[in-house]
Length: 251
Length: 187
Image 1 (cartoon, rainbow over the protein chains, first blue to last red):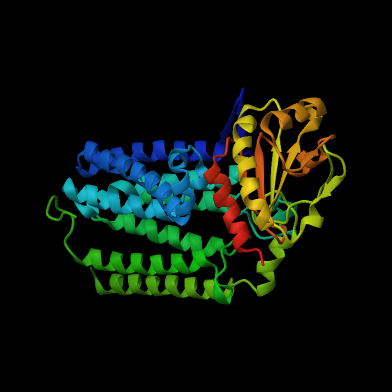
Image 2 (image 1 turned 60 degrees about the vertical axis):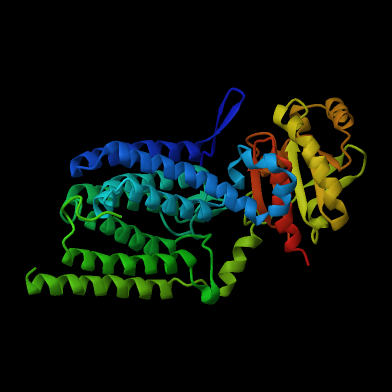
């Protein structure tokens, strides 16, 4: 665990740096894939960066709405540089909606755009795992008798953050090596989503801080199960329909 | 697509979904599992706040476990720390707003790397009215894994840390939006 890096008077959060690096590397890979598929790089980049900005703004607004009276009394706090006052779910939702709207306005075709995003997202998941290693978040279930268990938070535990990072690396490698479906068919993206969901379902069982729903169900497993089922169904459906040519279909 | 390949794909899909459902059912957490986590002490969200007992600048002492039943905000600071200075007015304001509702604010001065005299001057300068504890030998800071100043722990009435904010300055909104959930869960 190495959550902070002191540089003189500055205390840098290393998980944040890992995510930034992941975003930078991911967007570079998306650029290359966009060129390979035949999409306009500047349009895809515009979609990514404007979605990111919309997501950050959405996350702050989402948080502020939860505590409306406090922010109404302190409106300048809306602009505070503090990552603790962001609602990640709201941010992700706004980013996805904004990205969809942006792509539609620029007439970016859906399936090729998703395939272009696939390697970038896959590498960002690797960075996410590394961020968890650095922060000590997403820690594992107690596991005293494992030769590879790690001592974290006063207990010997599964190195669930390492499992997560390794799984993300394997998925990234597979999607790059095989590139399922024809280029721009969207199948590679859906396969990446299906593999990531399957990995999440399996690995969540080894986490020690899962959000637990009624009946003892781990929330991320249930959500990932639904996403997996949808992704598998869509792979089957898109495999059967003509989807490769551009710009036959736009968002 | 040849029929055999189609059938093979369908079988793989069914197998993957079946395994996923079975694994999700198998890895459900027994009720005790969801409770056990919070019985361990560790300086991070979701865990019991590690116990400490410190002398107060104004005399007497404060023991964390004796505050069980009340939300507690623990702010670790030093007089020479600029973001600590910047956020103290907001922390004092929050204390004055929430103390009638039972919220306890404790400012822990890292006296092992500061001085009692400077801490006292700091309190006077900002007109702080909440209790100031002195970490004379750094034990509390070590147990709380303090890596940067200020660091603030928001502890609920059961003694569980709900959030940790490293660095600052915290705005009034940050402090209040972290105190509000503590109050909601206080019986």
